[in-house]
Image (cartoon, rainbow, N blue to C red):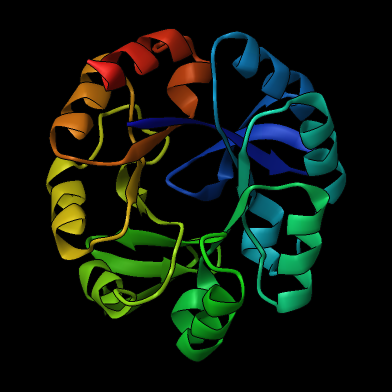
Length: 238
């Protein structure tokens, strides 16, 4: 199972939010590239980057911080947040990102998503963020009536890199992941499913692996020292 340490970017800094609330922000560093280097030194083989400003405002605005991270490390990195047109996709892939995560635009314009995934096969993941099982968009500020598992089913025939499934209620709360929701999502699709939200301990990682999840994203627990990258990798391998 893949372990994706998370670097969330806002205003060029490395931050974490609670339940996606921009009013509940903790700054963990002014130098995201240095954070990336520390993660790699600890054994990280992948990095999950999020442009929080982009997710909310629809524009990719932390480009310089992303560029510096890519210069600092030589491992595959993915980025989500504010990626809503073909030119941005091409630009970010050219920048050196391994793959991109499409969220809001994927839900609101499925025909556009299909066209982009067919143009960039295996390079785009869909981020499905859910509150009480229903899909949220626009930096989690809007909640739709679409069931997350139904959306996954609609994506079945697309050549996606993965589905990244986030339970908003668990995100940043250090209370463990929503295992039932993750199992339901895994059962709803043949795509790889990366779990996000609430992963706090090595036991959480092990339980997700037992459920067949293909990977998990880990954020606040790494920054607060509750879980280390070696511990997460060991739990995933076991």
